[in-house]
Image (tube, rainbow, N blue to C red; front, side):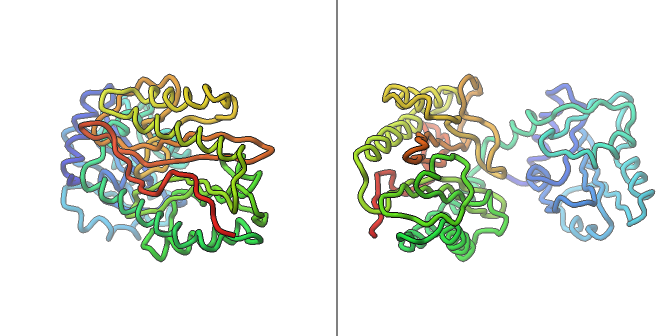
Length: 369
């Protein structure tokens, strides 16, 4: 979908809401709407979108060349290193807004830095959350976005296959993390990964958000990889758990339960289903096996330009899944004395159900010593 078409959709979404305008600062939604890529820095960049008008943009003069190629109209207001010019630019960019305007912002992205200048430029305005409007636009991926995400999956999967032969007794989590990252970059991933890979061996794998350490792998350890690649800003995010050497009966049982829960969650995805019903499907399997208290997080989350975005696959979420929505299914069981098992796949809702973008086997794999 072209950026012009996205801007038209945004206009319609704002008109259908209680908002007069939406303001975006540097973050994933800004390039999604405009094609403009800027880094979050000490120099604010803000775009204001008001139905029926060209977007207005505030940015540093040194970034002005970035807007010269944009294929649609945009009113650009630049500022210099003089702080007084910052106020002038913001006042000009927001000068078209009516008195007491209601302006939507992304409350998880907008900083106090930008908010301070916005409030000064539009003192009578009320700033409220516009995240629901933006989520409505971004949740449904088109064919181009799907292809970008599929390639991000490929990059990550190839990198893991290249890394696994190096997992041997004595190698550390940090060493494997470094190798995995290097392999993803070699496959074409952008350097801004969705997150630092979670590489956790043995008992460390019982921490869902473990950070790689100098712990050295031992025979019999659970080996958990949670990682993803960046393809032109679109992310993959997956988890696979292995055993170094022979798996014990306890590990085999735990793994089997998680594998069945993952299968149930994937099968539950279809147009019209609620996000919460997928969480129910995975959680039921784990609870029936007696591991309910050891499944300590939601089943998944939306995925795209953010590694965590709507729809959130959690209990009680009545958001209805629609064709093109992408999300993860990642049930897990975590036993502090033994370790953790998580199996995570990237999913997309199709007209007939759901499909996994990830292709790696979910069967228990025991790595050779």
